[in-house]
Length: 140
Image (cartoon, rainbow, N blue to C red):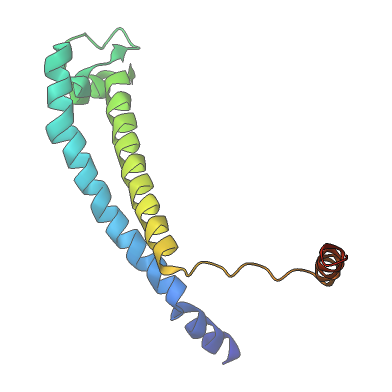
């Protein structure tokens, strides 16, 4: 019974629950970023470069003819899907930037919540030196 009790205490700790909530929200947020990249950004990039990045590839087999959709080309043989890779890298960069902004905002909030630390009290040696200094100043 000790193992089950220990596991239950571990599972209901705040950090485990926070992590679970973070993973769930992160998964949903990842889908939002995927949609932003695939549905909003990449079409504009495609217009600028006059290409559909999701279908840009280099055929690695003689069976694959250029001009096919990537899905159809993969059925015929291996392809070097560099356009899809660019889309995923762009997706990652946007997600990393948003996480950076969130962490930066949280750090700013933490700094506001923390009271400024009181200055450290001088050591006994420093106090003794200050007393000597004061006595020397008051000397006639």
